[in-house]
Amino acid sequence: MDFDRKGEYEEFRAFLDRGPAESMCSWLESEGVPSCVEARALSSGIESQFVVYVLKELAHRARWIVAQLPPSGAELDFLATGKLPGQMEEWHGKAREEHNLSLVRR
Image 1 (cartoon, rainbow, N blue to C red):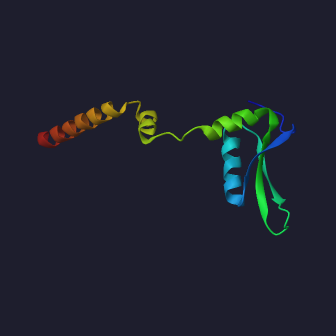
Image 2: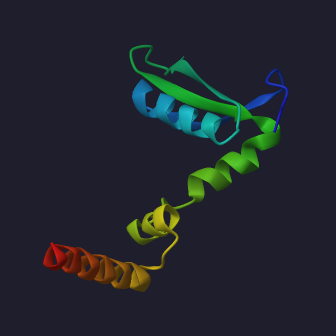
Image 3: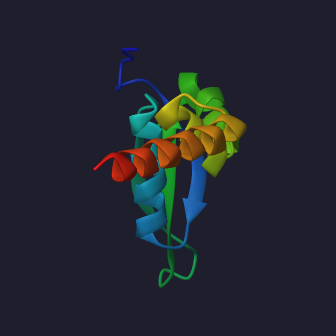
């Protein structure tokens, strides 16, 4: 996806610290949503917020990305091995048997 980064941006989320705002901005960028962080002084002038802005035409995508739950451990195992949780136990059992047989043959 190639979007014009010079389009109109809208406020997406506000944070009290820069770190979380930059982290969300990086996450959205990695997902293909152009974004930026700007500091905004509150009325007292002492406190500030850090606001994440996203390209207006992709704001719906940013909301969708943030709404997704992180993958579970079982999902990560499946992505790494291609095996479902029950298959993993079976695979580990077979690997253990083969290892034990190789020790006996020595």
